[in-house]
Image (cartoon, helix red, strand yellow):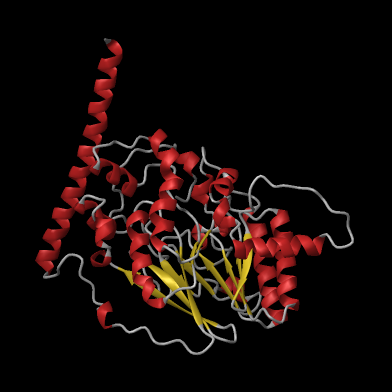
Length: 423
């Protein structure tokens, strides 16, 4: 009889934990409604009336793509909202800059979706489902729009690692546009050499593809640094872009920002990894030299910090090296939101979710504009999967700025030290 009793006690604890978390969410909702009523505001309201926003027709030869990163915690709610909202721009693809699921703890969206079905999602179940859930709810939300996925630091929190990521997302890391570039490089590298029979376990976590006269490059700094072989690969890719007259501009995406940006406190420039800063500095110099020598437009995108910021490399340290590279942080895909640095540009945004729209002109130059999404825009089909208080909590809370020390609503699966300094 002892085993059934233990199981019964465990079941009671599980359901009590879910009930406690739902109670916390309900209290958050009541507090937010009270605050809104006292200020004369309505919950879910926002100043922008998107029904009145007309998407300007594109000039001949122009096209658009969209970007954001960090979709853990509430990404199953936020990314479908981004997919629905961005459809008006008819994007050629969506690019995710890493941190797909929390891994160190159960994501709130997954926990409460399970609770709706009367299930408590423990850590063992969560770790098995986390990435398939991302594929179903976040990649799936974009339908036929091509989806490019990047690796972030949460993808390598134990028990997950880079190889598991590469295997799980092999279909996206080796989709036709990326695969064709790998084939071209391998063919070029093998000229004059005997054929080598080799088969990698999974596609590389760093990659590039050419689209509409633009080379899109994703760099893997999920472990805070760039491995020497990746920097060699990057140098070769940039050399080919320099010589290729069909490439009019280059966009580099990565998870963490390069050293000495405005957000340096949460980047490669502020890491305990001794290889982080020097490899990041080397990468910045490679990118800067390419821009200055080729005179081709160059753009650098990252996430990791959960806010929106532009001109991130316009700092005193980097101005010493020359005209800073244009850079953006767009960690606004659903993760717990962070405070802005004290010296953030006036155009920065905190406590927002949204995405960056890149409009590519016929000459390869790109204009970037950030678009915010709001609670009232969450699709009905998405809302139906979650308790109403959770959807509101994701937008009104889920923020270190609004709730400085909220505690965990869901089970923690990895000790804080193992999860890394920069959640």
